[in-house]
Image (tube, rainbow, N blue to C red; front, side, top):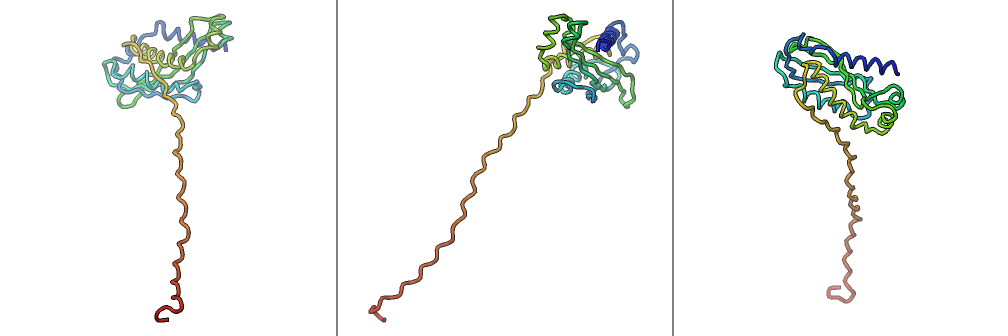
Length: 206
């Protein structure tokens, strides 16, 4: 586990360090559409995919000028700050993704890895406490926002503005069935017609 943490931190340092913006190689790109999917390896505590589907298009579509392009992003892994790792070597919340830029004809222009982190500054005992008590919904929102900012920075070398705050879809309450009206009672048998009474003896004509 600790080797994985160290490798991830090294990758983050590489991506955020001296790497040139991708447009320095590809030329100016104007992203017209962003598709976000999740790999089977993604095990998030909330609907992280829906959060990323809010932040990434909002941040990237129509934000820059250049050749028309599309961006496919696959969320590959999410890691939540671990108490033991935070106590011993330092840890954070992380979201990893694979991005693929394509031209209008669908041909791949370039692909890249993206990583964003949250709550990595505080470790030791305080970090272990944070990792146990943290709200995973807040963490996932922060990771979705961080990924949008990170990817824009990797492609263009800058961000155009503050990333929007995504919202988790409200869980709909189960529908309550309307009470069923009682079935009308079946009508009883029709009353038999009364037989005419025989005229009394001694009456006229008898």
